[in-house]
Length: 364
Image 1: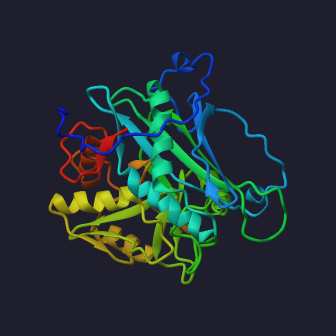
Image 2 (image 1 turned 90 degrees about the vertical axis):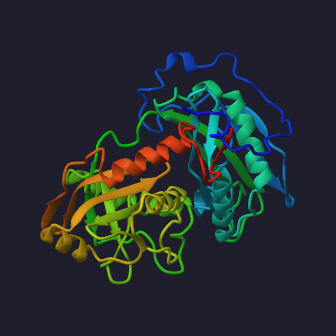
């Protein structure tokens, strides 16, 4: 069970910001343990503006529409970046965060790549913690899901000029959910489209990365699959990402995950899973591997598991892989398999259930 040593203390003092509260919370209308991902949003949002070279301290408002002209460059030229993170309810009722500083710093890297002013980490964390204090009742009970957190930054310049913008909005809102995927997924390999190119934005989180994946995702669903397995853009051979997840292939003698060569998002869950797998005694290599190698290993009986990792998806097993005119079926997922065991360890840490020797978990 959790104890005070489970969650590492952090400096959590906040600078108060103005708060406009809702007249009635909608949380009592929801069964938080049954919600699908991204469909219901909590009562409030945090909002800060960037003008004349500086960020405001922000404020908390009821969640709702933003009054913006259609000419803003955030809409015209996709000058927008976002993050994904979660708050869990620990067994004793506290809210805890998992490596939030890493999300804040990746958010800064994403903004800098699009010539946008990075949100200071102190502003990011201050707004986040005060928002969670307002909407803490929206976090599902321990073991019943999580409160997903979506920071987003976009240009609010009311101009269609093609140039770096000068005005921006930074917002954080939250959404409770039970599970991202309810079961192992079937994936379709895309060798027609590419997710990211060398020198592009594959290693950060601009909105445009996800827009370009929608058509392939729709085609995958038309073929009965839930996600797309992406290959590299140059040779269309090497496995890169799977939908919104980093990927891991469990072979008989080792576990492979694609290296961070600039076209793959450096997932915080990915990094955590690598650390946990190695602590469990597994050989984990960050190395390129071809989709043909995956199929050949399956034919030899050497491919034991294939799973993806991500903030919302946590650790999700792949049930089948479709590539061109062939589909391979993987062995049924077992709780004592590699993916199941590392998922349990990750969730135990992130939710405050288990002791945290890494200093990853901190109070919300």
